[in-house]
Length: 279
Ligand code: C2E
Ligand code: CA
Ligand code: CA
Ligand code: CA
Image (cartoon, rainbow, N blue to C red; front, side, top):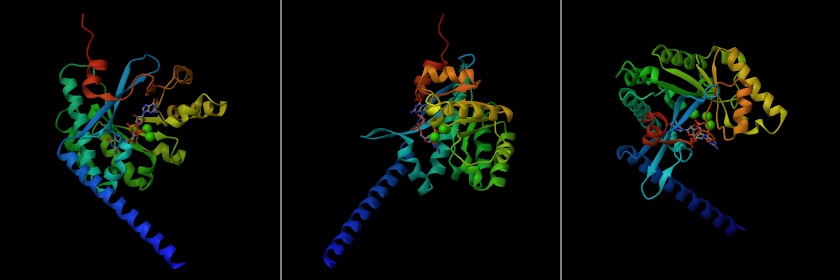
């Protein structure tokens, strides 16, 4: 039945062309988005579990797409990576986070380091060290105000290069956090060789923590491991008081999540978390 398979072929071809067209439009719109300044950073605070004080914030990108509204990064970062646009947008995010940090610092506000997510393509690009150098070179205070968030898989692809890139970055005074900890496959010996300042326990473990004793001991082990390696440890995606209480008992250093705050635009972050209460 040649006719049926012929139709099927036509069908596949039509839908493939369509998805290519959609992809091309999206790619062009993302290109324009950069020119038209449509990307924004939202900031989500991290807080100390012991004191309740803010310890820093993570910058999370959004695309303020005309006629659509705020688009979350999961919907466009993959396209940016496939097209190489991630280098430009990633650079913009670093630049914007540093500019915001310095502006708040110069205004005398009690701003803490800001963490910026870095794509593996950025980390592995030959010019990355120089790029960071240039970005933090604009002000002596900039380097200590910047943290990079990387994932295990990024460094795993080329461990030796990954380690030396991170080392160079840390020598500038920029700190490094390992994001989504627990979701990768790094061995412990390798983890101990990475020049890190902080581990961020992936949200999925925090989510499962209260359900079973195993979930709890897994998180406990991760916290112990971080402390053995002399690293600070942050729990991601903390949504309930119960999770916060457990994490405090387990001696986790910091938490980040909806319980304390969702990511908010820079001006909201400033007025809500940085501005001194008057009087
Ligand atoms: P991530 O780095 O693991 O960021 C944490 C994600 O969890 C964020 O999603 C944040 O909004 C969300 N989150 C925070 N607290 C909670 C909570 O209590 N509950 C729940 N359910 N979610 C919470 P978002 O903003 O959609 O970002 C998704 C991912 O996009 C990020 O995951 C990161 O991998 C990537 N991303 C964000 N900004 C950038 C960027 O500037 N550059 C690059 N390369 N990637 C970025
Ligand atoms: Ca992150
Ligand atoms: Ca994460
Ligand atoms: Ca994640």
